[in-house]
Image 1 (cartoon, rainbow, N blue to C red):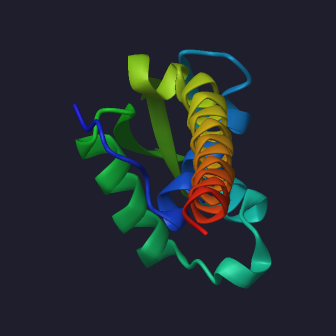
Image 2: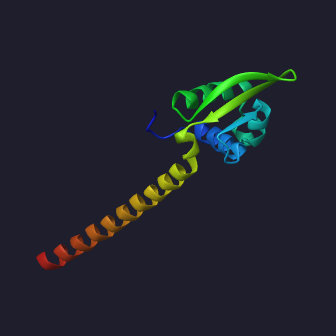
Image 3: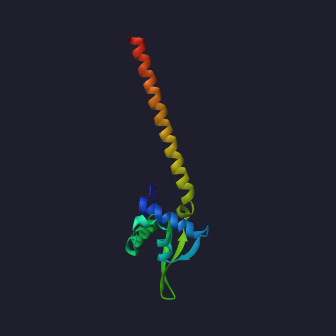
Length: 123
């Protein structure tokens, strides 16, 4: 299972898949339904979508089974633990970023205060 961060494209596709799942562990979805949920400026096409879906599948977010529904390409998606916990991991990642940013700000202020204090003492 993949423990790192997702790329921007992977994150957009995973958010669309998670939204389409509506909390279900298994569901059917067409590539066009996924493409409709992606931001237009991302400029996804079916080939790029296929590559990103395969990457996410290899990373352990879900399993894909390719199917045909009335002549239309369809994916049978089976969400795994990482896929089901995607939202929680995303919120946690944002919280960690905010904590690190706050810590960096506090350390910067503390360094400046110590520098000014030392300058006042040594002058």
